[in-house]
Structure formats: structure tokens, C-alpha cells
Image (cartoon, rainbow over all chains, first blue to last red; front, side, top):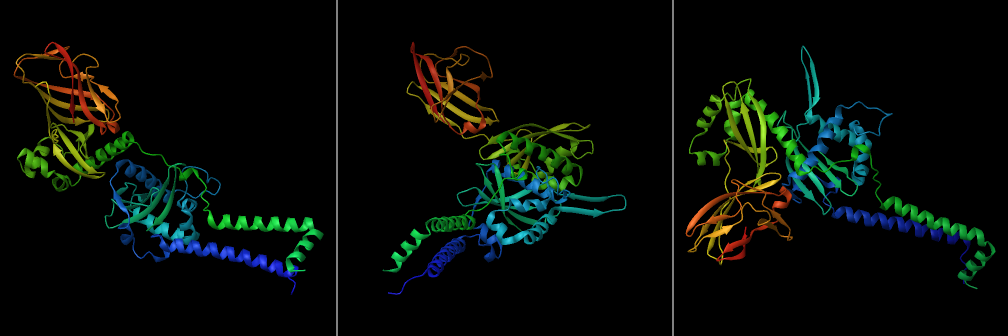
Length: 187
Length: 280
């Protein structure tokens, strides 16, 4: 009988390892395909909202409103590379607060583009003779909240009070055990 | 010898190195699986949030409405306010939107010096009612903001709100109770109650006596009466007579939905003391 030498054993072990990695990846992709938040396949958020449950809970409304208000105001916070460990940071730092899958999907540049598109809807910039107005419209008026999954994940539809044609969508997951939130969608 | 025996021989010869390679191999597998599978979400200070409780939510809403109304009344007030007038109020007050606008104008609501302050807020069924006062040099007027959802509200004048349908219970002792919930606040609930003695002799109910009238919750807990509109110890109700009482119980708003009944304890009927439970 032909002997299996050391090199062949090493090749066999490597193939097993690669097969394991491939298997895990395939299972993850199958799971992702089933998820309504398969980001690459979302055409319009309005279709997704119908998959969720609209809620009218006031406590949730005001909790989400405070989070969104803080995020909107982060657009005009100065970038400070030395001071990233505070409550008030520039909107670019919120890349770290993206949900894991969303972060992988967007990447840093993708997030910057999405965030700017979303936050510009609430940016008031008027150059006048006497003074220039450069501020954020943080009078967050959440028109509707849709809940997804068993964990508390919400998509909020927000309309700018300054210009009612500006509508934005932000998806927020509340990790109640750690009192942390993650952003899983921006439009 | 087969290849498995060769492998065993190889391990025997290079025992330490072989074990080390196997251990490293499995560590690599575990690290790769962990890296692929588990999301990495680290907590940052700016990712923290606080749950807004009902009291804080109420404060946020009040401030927001006071600011919003101040702007609406001062700038382009009439049309904006007209669109927000409650249809239920118009029907209830048997008036028109123009009448409402005129009352507001007469009170100086649209004047530049008009000041708005919040007075009180409470739940009525699924809505939240905010009582707001508008004062100017011409006069003052009370408004009710009837909010069905945050930032979605209608306006009524005075202290308009719909009363709940009354409950009528006739006990086995021929005493009839009619109870209507009239007001919820963050810490109290108020009832208007009519008690009719259908018997041929008087009955005594201890309205001003501690621990004789209480609210029962679904978990069995009791909250006893803290105040009535009039002070009394035992109130005698003559035969075939009806009395009306306003009862206020100090119960926090989140607990009010657990209320199942009002309990009257040790009512003196026929010379004996009886307990009566009125379901709500």
C-alpha cells in the first residue's frame, strides 16, 4: 500500500482548515440571504418598513430621539484626533458605532458618504450679509418607528422641520444589557 | 505497515514538535472561527444611551410644545392654529374654528408679548393631554394639547377632555355605584363617583377614614384613598338617596393600568360591617 508521507499529511490538514473556513463562510452567506437586511439587495427602505412592526410607544420614541439628536449634532463637532473618548465626537467617529455587518458592508469611505448624505438633510447653512448661519436642525421629529427582530432594532423615519421635503431614515439597535446603541442603517 | 502506523511512528520520533504543531493548528482554527463568526462591537462613550422614562419624556415633550407653540402663535399663527383645532372640541363646544380663533385673538394669543407656560399633563386613554396657559397684556386663556403621538397633536380650549364611560355596579347589598374616571396625572388618578342607597335605611361609608377605601391592582396590591373633595369620617347616605364624591388616589401612572377594582371596606349596613368591591 502506498504510504502517506509527512508532506501529504500537512496538505490534508491545510485542506481541512480551508474547507472549514469555506463552510463557515457559506453558512454565513446563506444566513445573510435570508435576512431582510441584506444590504446589497435593498432597493428602497420603504419596502423593508412593511416587514417591520410600526410602534407608537412614547418611551421608545423619546429614547431614540435623544440618540438621533446627538448624532445629528455630531456633524458640526470639530474633529479632534486626541480626544475620541468623550460623549461628544465628530460624526466620523460614529463609524465605530455601526453594527458589525453594516460596517463590513459600507467600509469607512462608504460610511462617510452615507452619513454626509443623511446629515446634510438636517444641516442649515445660510450665508447672509450680517451673519452666516451654520447649525443643525436637531428638532428631531420622528414620523414613524418600525421595529424589527426580537432584539430592539428600529428604523426611524425623520422629517426635517426646516425643510419638510428632507426625509431621512436611520436604523438603531438598542443593546439594553450594555446601554449601548448601534447604527445599522442610514439613508 | 499502513500510513496510520507511519504517522504514529513519526509522532513517537518527533513527539514534542508534533504535539506543538497540532496545538498550533487547533489554535489557528479557533482564532479563525472566532474572527469570522463573532462581531466585534466595543463600547464607546458616545455609543451610550439612557432610557428615557415617562417623567423625562413628559418634560421633553412639554418643553418642545411650549417652544413650538410660542413660535407658531407669534409668526403665521392663525392658519397654522386653525389646522390644529380639534374637531372633537368643535363638536363638543358647538362652535366653529373661527370662534376659537376669535377667542384666542381676544386673549392676545397672537400678540408678540404673549407668553406660554405649561401647567399639567396627564393620560386620557391612549392620548396625552397637556394643559397650557397663554398670558398676554390683553388677558389669558387655557389650552389643551391633545397628543395621540409625539409631535402629533390637536388643540382645544379650556379644560376639554372626554370622560370615560361610567361603570355602574349594583352590589348585593342594594347599593349602586356609578364610577367615572375623570383624570390621570403622573402620580394620581381621579374618579367621579355616585353612590345610590336603594335600601330603606341609611348606610355609612368611611370616606375620611384611613384604609377603608382603596384601589386594588391585578397583583393584589392596594392603594388607599388619600383625599376627597370634602373631609368626612363616616358619611351617612339616607335611604333612596344618591351622593356624589370625587376620589383621588395617589398611584404612579405606570401602575394605573393594573387597576382592577375599588374596594369599600367595613361599610355599615344593617348594623353590620360589609366589604364591597366595584370592578373598573
